[in-house]
Amino acid sequence: MDRDSHGEDTLSTLVLENIKNKLIHAFRATAESRGERQDCSVGRSQEADEELRRAQIDGAITWLRSELMEMRTQDLQLAQTLLGLSSEIQRLRREKAFSLLLSTLRGSRHET
Image 1 (cartoon, rainbow, N blue to C red):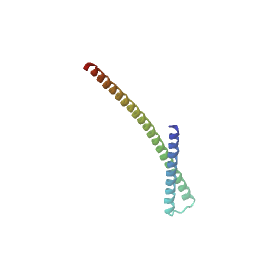
Image 2 (tube, rainbow, N blue to C red):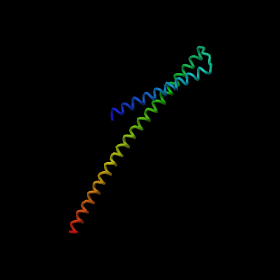
Image 3 (cartoon, rainbow, N blue to C red):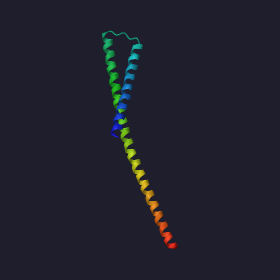
Image 4 (spheres, one colour):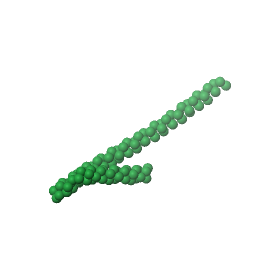
């Protein structure tokens, strides 16, 4: 399971990194399409806006990563619960089959 988890972590990281790059590119393209002139003060303001956007994107990615980790934990707990229930069902089926076998054997003894 550790190998699967590591693979999922790698895949999640790649997906989130791809989303981050797309968002950064989209913000950059939006700013360029506005045709804003970059004098010194405007350039600094845009740089600050860009850094703020990157920080917001990083924050969103961190939140997504934590949500994915929480979902993985819940999935593992659910899988354990389902395995436990399956084992219990199998045990009960065996007990019922054994009980039926005993009652059948007892019934055949009384008939003879």
